[in-house]
Length: 190
Image (cartoon, rainbow, N blue to C red; front, top):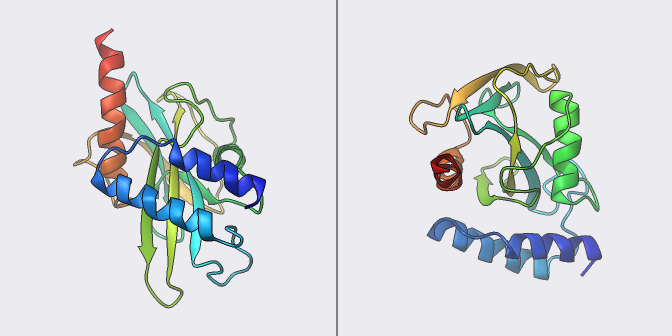
């Protein structure tokens, strides 16, 4: 196993699962990482059939809001994200994507720089694949203006951390918000 793959394996194994689905997803991904011969996408085809992505969710924990951009390709409001490049660690991908898509540097003092949640999105034909999403929590401020990459997004908005008031977005975001709420609630009680 390559060093970077071993490091990603350790990061995935360290994620504390929020629910049974995340526990199952972590187990599936750990099995794939330990058995795979090359875990990074090699070309435009779905090779390998599993792709690693880093999600960077910008959160204002005081205002209890998150920033999502309306993505050109999907038409959905999504966190900043990107496929991990060859030999790239998840947090390095987060830093690269946040710089490219928001024009800023990541601040990771809410839960730390490690992946916070792992989800798997299965994508249908014509190019079936599984996208492994490693969710990271970044600190943002609702009053901050971000310079969105116009090649990726046509606009961005702050949304309440209310899973029922969200636009068309990643179907796993409600699970992310439930796990995040568990972290933010104790901090607010102080």
